[in-house]
Amino acid sequence: MIAGLAGGGTISYFMWDKALKAKKVKIITEAEAEGEVIKKEKMLQAKEKYLQLKSEHEKQVNERNQKVVALENKLKQRETAANQQRNDLMRDIRNFETEKQEVEQQRELLAAQMQVVEQKQEDLERLHRQQVEKLEQISGMSAEEARAQMVESLKEEAKTEAMSYVNEIMEEAKLTASKEAKKVVVKTIQRVATETAIENAVTIFHIESDEMKGRIIGREGRNIRALEAATGVEIIVDDTPEAIVLSAFDPVRREVARLALHQLVTDGRIHPARIEEVVQKVQKQVEEEVIETGKRTTIDLGIHGLHPELIRLIGKMKYRSSYGQNLLQHSREVANLCAIMAAELGLNPKKAKRAGLLHDIGKVPDDEPELPHAVLGMKLAEKYKEKPEICNAIGSHHDEVEMQTLLAPIVQVCDAISGARPGARREVVESYIKRLKDLEDLALSYPGVMKTYAIQAGRELRVIVGSDKINDQESEQLSYDIARRIQDEMTYPGQIKITVIRETRAVNYAK
Image 1 (cartoon, one colour):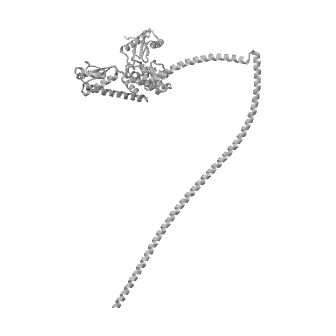
Image 2: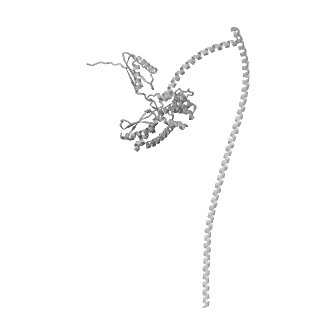
Image 3: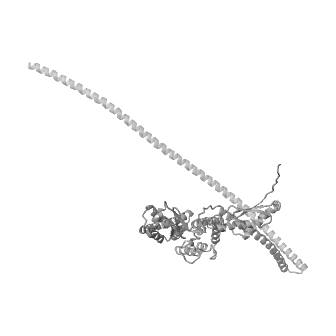
């Protein structure tokens, strides 16, 4: 039994050993197969790496080869250029040598010609001396005496001709100067458009109902007295419906009174304490408005660097009128006229515009000194560091100071243009009607004139003549004579057009 067990164990051992060997062989086989696969993968990777390195190496080699080729080409180009320059230099040297030889030949030829010329000149001088000696013997005068006599005769002849030329030039210059001056003035006036502003010595303040008049007057008139004392304006409350009149020569005070009344009436609280408070507030507002107006005016005109006090005085011009013409509007107009006229004449338009704006600054001082406004304006400009030519133009625009620069007559002329244009200044009705009547009477004084009509506010005169008394040629002469007489005898703004009408009528009746 034991032997049987032993024999069975042996068989079992051999079977296990055999299976183990078979498994070992299988593992080795699989390991070898896997090793072969890994070996092939590594070989492929190594081959790919080799190919990649080879490709990069070839690329680098190609790039280096290209650089080498480029350098070789550049060197060849440089060598070619150097050869070309060397050839050009050699050619220039050869040309220079040729030209040098030609110049030497020309110099030798010129030297020979100079010798010939000198010889001929000596011969000519000898002949000239001989001729002069013969002439002196014949005329009995020396050459110096003959030359002096000839110079004197030529001098007299030249003087005569020069005087005639001078007279012609003077006459032409007068005509040209008059024509050019008129052209400059006309161009200047045509290029400036302006508005007309008229202010009065009174301001009408409108109210909603007449009941408000009693509240403005106050108990025993204390409100109106307080308002007049605070503003310096005379307040007239009469029977005019829904209106109160504010009277004062100072437009700034009238404006303060108008604004203060407007605020008091709107608020409804009208008593002396409230009146003083509102007037003070409005005065401050008007002062700010004055400064703002001055700044806006200087900015609009492109004038810079003015003293703040001059800017404030410019703003005050808004509330000042002269002969019915608003002073600020007039000054702006004169400034633009001055700039244009200065540009036409080749002068500095900025200085001219500055002088034109400031020329009437003496009309709006804070105090009232006994000085003409032109002189006062000049002193104000000097006080606030304006340039001497600006100050002189301001002071001399009414001939109260001697003119020292070309700006002065320009400002004077432009001031006259602005004040004399039609519609610039208000005329009293009586003087206006009288001027029209004088105009018509002047034309009626000529023989043959039947009727005259002053139209277009006195800027045109229509003259009707009898066709049996004056012919067409005499009509033209009459128009010219009337125009000349108006210029000589009358004072008027702008210009007056004279139209002579001669009419021929043929009348028949059908019966």
